[in-house]
Image 1 (cartoon, rainbow, N blue to C red):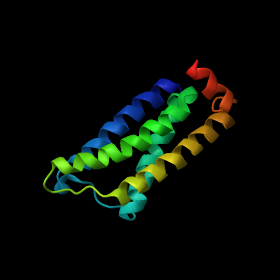
Image 2 (cartoon, rainbow, N blue to C red):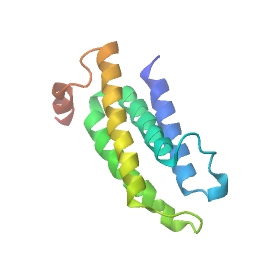
Image 3 (cartoon, rainbow, N blue to C red):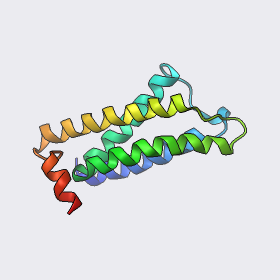
Image 4 (cartoon, rainbow, N blue to C red):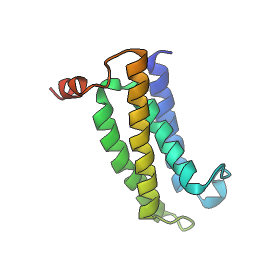
Length: 125
């Protein structure tokens, strides 16, 4: 599958997560597992999609999504029906870290060496 499909999916998934996070609680989807597992899996999938779509930017993706997890959590402060919790941001950030690792593993298996330290350093130049 071309990386542009992963790119479209990643950006769509990010928009969906932001909407679900700040929407009134009544618009939130039904819980599938536990709240923490749902959050971690959602952010892991988000990270996987971004790392597959932009394999040479995996370090930046990890950092931005970890910071973004906290930022998205803080967005809940603008709604009266939601609450921001540091514990939720930590769960989301953990999901990001796992997703970045799995995305890199996928990239390494399918077309080495796209997530190596060499490509991360080369992309900064």
